[in-house]
Length: 138
Image 1 (cartoon, helix red, strand yellow):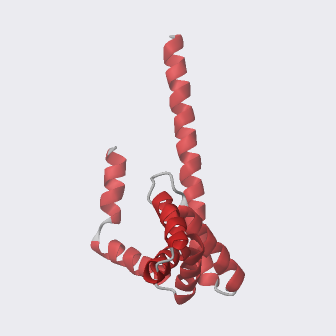
Image 2: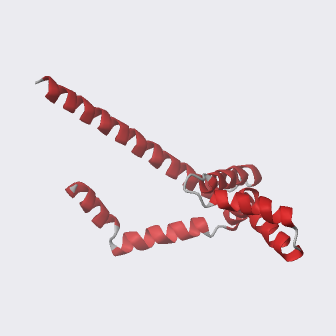
Image 3: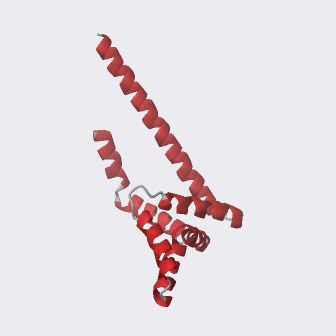
């Protein structure tokens, strides 16, 4: 726990935090990524908001019913729409802008970090389970 707190404190120092925030902002504010995210959002959620607005404005009941039902589903905690939206945005980015190596490199880096963290966590759990099993044998 002390190691984790020290690591967090290390990462929150002024210069490092400023650098990380700038890097994240440059990634998020990338017009290509924003375009792909907008298209992904329109595919997953946007159509229902647009349909709901048009149905309300023109008083078309079936539009209101269909879009309202989908919007109600989106607000459930089990709805995977945010994950799906990001996945679609990344796929569109790779398909529409394969020459944007800078953004794709950031995504690859995040993917590798996530993979490493997941493997480390699995190893830690396996070690804890083995230690617990050996203690029970004694």
